[in-house]
Length: 336
Ligand code: MG
View 1 (tube, rainbow, N blue to C red):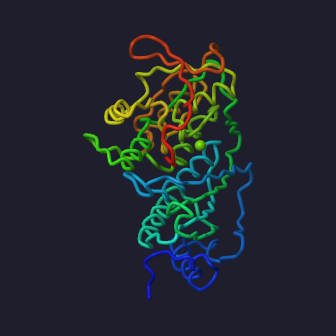
View 2 (view 1 turned 90 degrees about the horizontal axis):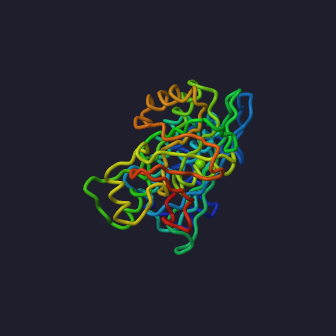
């Protein structure tokens, strides 16, 4: 008989667990490295420095407009591995499942992982499954780790911004945070907001094709654009000055932020990159971003200045300047 919910026995090491692993995970993620089901995956990497990153996903609800926890888990790690100028290659994934999760829901989530991994050109080559009792977890948590190889000659780091560099943003901000919170709270806005969750490695590769002089690159996830820019300003000991009117924000996201009392600069994104680029190459990198399906709304939003060091300044609509701080406390728990 086909089981329609996950049972504790699915994590026990017995026949149900083997059915779950070979029948579901291995058949969905199907590739020759995983298919061996050895204790560890083995593979060759092209020569170069290795980029290695991990993240755990606890988003609530599991499925939201524009994505789900599985898509997030693949795209988030692909984007982190890419953000040092690497081509991501292999992913691991670990699942913590609360007993009672519907197998059909798990399948939907796995299908999204397969689709995002395929789009990004990465293979899921090893994994782990644990099942915990009712109340031991909130339905499903996923951890992914990824490895990739850094492109030769590329030197990207948060401490590398130089005065005079331009600041580029690949599109609208706040979409992911507002999509998840509206799903969670049952809020509806005039136009439904979708998460921007997407694998950005191909966009990053074309940005690097356009210029090797990308100094900083980061996906502005939790804490939003404000956190990423403050991290760059502090690590590089420079000032960052952006122009509010140049930062793309959807009308419905701006409206939702106003209603909920959020500063859109603090709201999470899952499909955006911020790049700090040598001024002479900024237009070429912007054109590469815009040519990507995930960078159509890309813009140059500001520049690196020498004063005030370690801080982010925003020139507002009203002609004044304000300091943009990092998010204090927790605005949106379990957003990713
Ligand atoms: Mg990141």
